[in-house]
Image 1 (cartoon, helix red, strand yellow):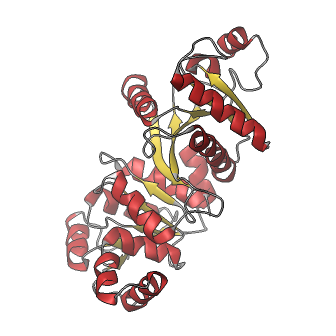
Image 2 (cartoon, rainbow, N blue to C red):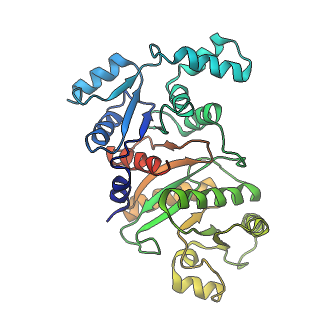
Image 3 (spheres, helix red, strand yellow):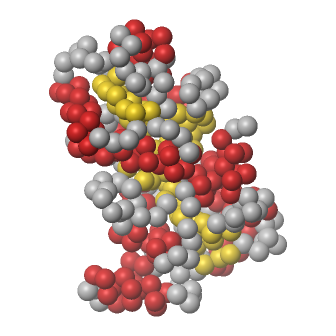
Length: 327
């Protein structure tokens, strides 16, 4: 059974309310219709009511009873503006311009409990989704840096989680410091536990394995590993490890002389920077035929998924199921 089918089975019958900030997008509308028809979620489409209804009619989806929220006419608009402005000691007219933006309005719906998570990004760059999430939803207690991960399903690779791996951080932090890298590792491990019920085995990746090369970028990963050791987290981790040493048991044992608790068995790959993770993700997807779900933003007080601009209906459904799994 593939991971999305498993997540669908978990979600079916619970019907979590999920808000889609780009309700006018036809791909979002088709995905929302499928989620509704299969009893996987109660989608809320945010945007111009007239334009969404016209789009649903064009897609022959207007009979499904999908919930539409137009910020301009929604009954909660005044309450959202008042709440936002009081928290920031801001004039209401200024707050209104912010809250009326679909990303911010959707985030406010999550913050106030009207929806359990937000899916966005197909029409907005990642930076906009992050800004709205930080501004409205905020970070979890104890988290100082938001990050993201992909759930990667690779037909040609079979590891400790069958064909699945987690790649982090593919979309948010261009050059994390050792402390930030350690926090990304911790947050990703927690996401794997809460969303997928995995026992995390985290590999801090580098072009070096256990001192086989010297370079400031290697030193950064080594420092992140030491920070994790000092904090005594209750999950397995190791670094620095090359990618082959992290996921190939024979190579991992050879390169670490069998001393690593993670080498060859990693299910979470923490990349040293955004360049490495983004490039590796695109290559695995294009050459290896992998399916990518997410990126899911993590570290926020409520679940947020940031879609790729080229997301398909299946991608949107997969991201929605990951969000639903975090309830």
